[in-house]
Length: 125
Image (cartoon, rainbow, N blue to C red; front, side, top):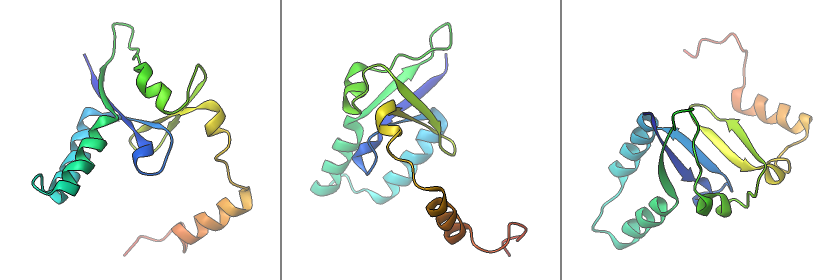
């Protein structure tokens, strides 16, 4: 059975759940572990709170997952949710919250130009 990790993203800045394949989750943990000293109280508290919002899930025989109610409650999702692909992970949002995070098309275009800059044909050298 395929294992996946579900993490509560609001710990940092978003009110959503983030679904990772187990391999991607391990890569995220490796990055964190390189920066954390388990004997530092503040960093230990960070890790405790970081893991508080996680759950390891497995796909059932019909390739479905059951999201724990405690995590659905954290994002305020009763019934309707949005699954949004996000570069190697899937965000799970309460539908009404997701509908409110849109930005005007012109602002998005300006942000894309700022972040991506230059020509789309640049090789990055």
